[in-house]
Image 1: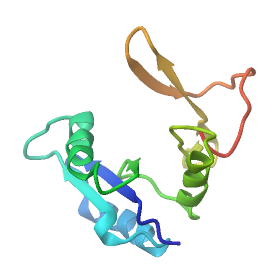
Image 2 (image 1 turned 60 degrees about the vertical axis):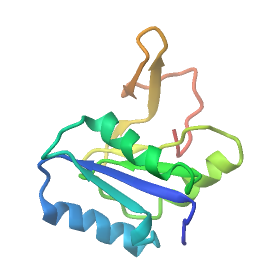
Image 3 (image 1 turned 180 degrees about the horizontal axis):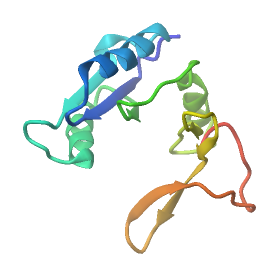
Length: 137
């Protein structure tokens, strides 16, 4: 499935090229076009994770509708992009992300928590009973 309205952003810092190549191959295998993948290597001039993402978004905001931010050390076994896009396009969420699993297959994080007082966010690992659990966050 081709996702021409999605820019994939990957920020690296002293990350092995062989592992990055594995991620890129996986993305190409599920139909992501190479021209829609943007990699920012922070090794020479570390502007920070958020700074690197913002740099790419500012340059590409007119061309893309959606931005998918990936850590370079992830792996996946299926096309996770389509359900995330569907969730946002249907208006179910403004921000969507997959459920994250650790190397043993255990759920690592299921939801994001926003701290409005500190203007920060993070992943929540404990089960929250007042939420509806779905395959996206």
